[in-house]
Image 1 (cartoon, rainbow, N blue to C red):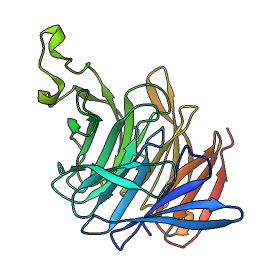
Image 2 (image 1 turned 90 degrees about the horizontal axis):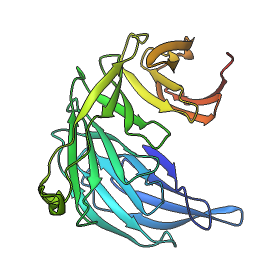
Image 3 (image 1 turned 90 degrees about the vertical axis):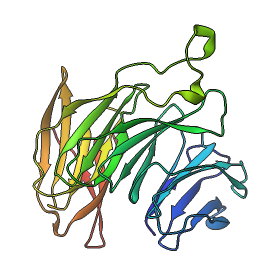
Image 4 (image 1 turned 180 degrees about the vertical axis):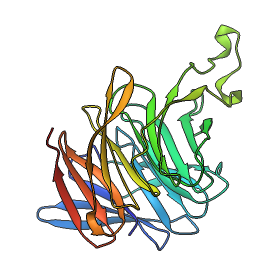
Length: 276
């Protein structure tokens, strides 16, 4: 298994699991048991990441086959229809991340880029690449959106750096304003807003933004780093050395505003409380 994500809506708890066998399995909790509801097939190679949209209507998946698939889900968790196959990346797609309030998707890839996709205003089944965020010197491993109704996301990469990207212009609107229809637009303006202080010494694999605006990262060097933003400047708030001993840390998530979970190559999941 490569990725697990809970569905944010629905009558019962449910989750999606992306697997090495190129499938996605959907599970729902019934009474005290977890029941397999569906097996989704389509990718030609291992599924590296899955993520639900904020309203639970869409499931995005990405794969070593260089593609991103967007699935439309029903409330029963039994029927999933692929409404779009996106093939913009030149190499494996490592991670997909939905915006917390909008139907906007960010992807991270071994081709050293992050790309932003949004639903077309005129065709809900069409997804358009509106930005290609370049600048990383190596694989972009993970991205995460700011947990607000804004247009900022952070990513981490093989070059040991964390970067913040921000939308700097509105997209083109319809012909009513004398502009091109949305189906013909290809880009928005997204700019590199900040490069965070370099604390990691090796590739950074995981990044997570919490609701209080703190950003946490983990990586191959075994470090866990927490950053805070003060008046537009990013500062290091806390550093934990050897979070999983000598092993790499592959994933980091916020449990709540001051508690982190990390998963490492030692097979353990550790919980950390931030004391500041």
